[in-house]
Image (cartoon, rainbow, N blue to C red; front, top):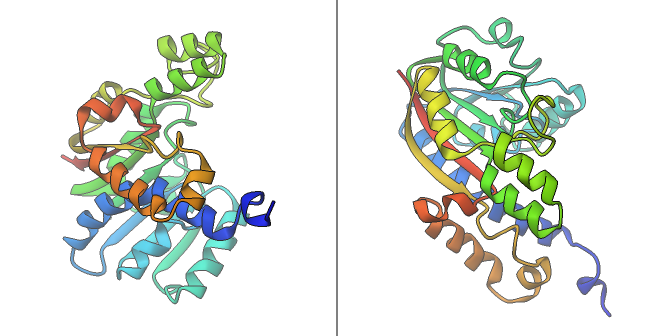
Length: 254
């Protein structure tokens, strides 16, 4: 058996990563393309700059706020290698220190991807993000979706965890802390409204990509691109939203 069929290859990992992020990036890029350059973008929890560097490559200024100095060091190297070091700034911190790192009402766009699941108080977190945005600014919010996680755990035989997720949004049940919290679309819409946002669009992310065997995507000619196109085709269809691993929401600050 060849190494190709045994070991993950960098190209394989990149194609699968592209399938996972394509829906979010395309929706975000439509927002960014409508803004004058350079717009002010804040990426909270942006880590190593997977989105931040791409945003900077469009000509926008990006501040990445992340608690990890190692991640910020990688961000700096990536921005330098991509020729956008002058547009990307890393600042160590989190949502609790955000007011000290970014002035109120200064951002045109805020990215909050994969952060709301781990904060103690999602409502307070979104209120802090609203304060950072100028009125009319856009929040790009990416969260793990509850219903798909229930199905995944049930299929793996973890029935107690699936029931806990179904009823409380956490695999460990109510009162067990913020880790691994999941959200439904209705919950996201409600908490955004309560914190001063109007929901403009909601997309299902990773409807199929986590279900398709890697070997099929790697070895079948054209499969990776076809998978990306399929993800795009179902992203804004409400009947597929509950099947998505994640929900991406674009919301405007009132």
